[in-house]
Image (cartoon, rainbow, N blue to C red; front, side, top):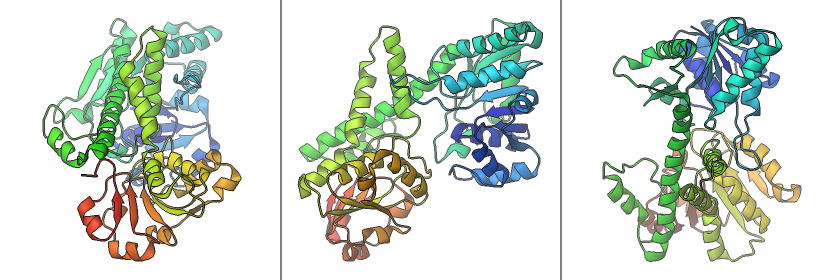
Length: 455
């Protein structure tokens, strides 16, 4: 099939590349010429394991191309995936300006039947707005909707950053929302089922439903996962107070098949591009319909507080004034295997430490360039000057009073504790991801603070 993907961020680039890997002819559009220049020169503008190899292979095979030419991108694809950003607006609602701009471009240049796919995470009712935007452009061209023909489909993504390629190629489920009441909707559904047929060889992973239910499914999934994280973080904070090891609790409750182990790890809170904005957007949608989502409001509140838990532990040991203190920070990205710094807990940690006069010596395997950019937005110049970046984890420990861990990279899991103790000014670790067994670290001579591990 001929596919167009609008947007070359995490979702768009992974979607386009993986569909090309299945043998489709894919053209990816982005209005940022810098991104397209990187892609056309053999680079990849994001870090995602396995992605560059797939991009290189499919570009070489002629199945994957990149452009800034809107008109040619609309002409190319029978199926048009809209995979642009939906950042949170000031009121917490999803900003749909880029989605609707993409829809208008499709209406402006389409001349034959198109399946327009909302791949971006969008609120319930967005497909109606996309359909209206396309219809307006067709009307401006004095074309009726039936003259060219189109249908808007919801096909939400369920990709984890750091494992997005694997998630796309081995999906748990594929959700397709289409309007079965119209011939165009039924035709679109058939095309989408055919597109995803390679994933159904072992068993059918496709769930078809109405458009609004598909839009809602994505928000419901992310809200549930965010809820599990905040739930465990609240329990972990209580565990610290009552002398309970939250890791043992996690194993105990996760063994129940009704609960399971996924997303039950205590830490410094969730971040990234999805959970924060999707929880906010769902709360906002409910408010627009006269309902308060009290559980999700609490989930967001708990998560915002959790990003400061490590700093609270640091202040309990060193006092409120951190002048003349230096902290090594391992991990900047919001999670491992990505360079994404959006809503990363490390940003809140760094900001609070330097605001109190401390210096921060940071290391991250892949996110340091992006961290420099983001922290320059977060901090005034005099505070930014207190943050330095180090290529090796052990370099960041030189002259530091303590180590703070904000991201659970594998490279940090099995360190040389003796060398760490000899390098740090004090043998102190504040572990925001519970990477280490407290007894082992304390036996090595460290003062160790995890999240919910004071038993």
